[in-house]
Image (cartoon, rainbow, N blue to C red; front, side, top):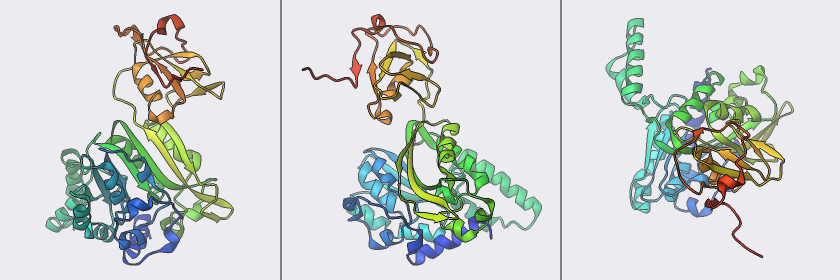
Length: 370
C-alpha cells in the first residue's frame, strides 16, 4: 500500500471514531477549546500547539487541518481582520471540519475559516477542481492522462489553491512526517512560496534522534502513525534553512520521547522560522550589539556577531535581528542621520565604529538608570 493510501485510510477512520494512538499529550489553551464542538476536539490528532504563535490580523494557513481544531482556535486569535485557511487532502476530515463551520462562524461573529482540498506538498493544485475535471474528463488512455497533466499545470499557474506570498503564518500539527520522503523538499519549498516576505512558520511535528532505517519506513502502520516518516531532528531544521528561511529555531523540544522503536526516540518538537524581507541589503549605517552569553554567534545568512561589539548590518538584517524572532538577543542602534546608502551590505564581521553610530535611536537597550 502506498504512503498516501495508508495515510488516507488511517485518517478517514480517525474521522469516524477517535484514534487515541495518534495523539501526543498536548497542553492546549482551555479558553480557546471551550468554544469548539467536542467532536472536533476528540477527533483531532496532533503533537503540539502551533496556535500559540498566531497574532491578531494574521492570515493563517494550517497544513493538514484535519478536524479543524487548530483552525478554529487560530480564528479566535486573528480577530475580525484575520482569516484562517485549512488545507487537507482527506474528504472525510474536510467534511468533519466543515460540519461545524456555520455554528463556529455564528459564535465568533463572522466567517473567518475556509477549508480547501489539497496536498500540502503541492499547495498550488486545487484537488476539488481536479475532482470536477475528472468527472467531466475521465482518464481512460495515455493521451487523456497527458491532457490531465496539462490541465494541472495550467491550474497551478492560473488559479493556484494558495497564492504566492499570501500568508502571514503557516502552522501545522504533526502532518509533515506523513508526506513521502521524496516530496519533503518540495513541501518545505511550497511553504516558503506561500509565506509573505517577513512572514513566519510554526510547525509542530514528530522528529527522530537518529535516522530512520528503511525497513521501518516500509511499515505502513508506523508511517501513518506519525513514526517512520519522521525526519531526524537536525535534518528537520536544515530543510527550512535550505529553503531560504532564517531565524530557524527549535522552539519546543519534548524531553520525554513520545515513542521509542528499535531504540530510536521519536519526540514532539515545534520549530519557528521567518521568511526574509524581499528587499536589497543596503548599508545605511545601522548597527547591532549581540548581548551574549556566547563570545560570537552566526545567523542563517552567514553573518557573525561578536559579543558586545557594534556590528555593521544592512537595514533589512537590522529589522529582523531587533524584531520578535530573536527575543531581544540584540541591541539595535539606528543611524543618527538617514542618508543615502554608502555600499551594499557590509561584509560579515564588519564592525561599526562608535563615532558613526552616536546619537542614533536605540532598540532593545536598557533605559533604566541606577
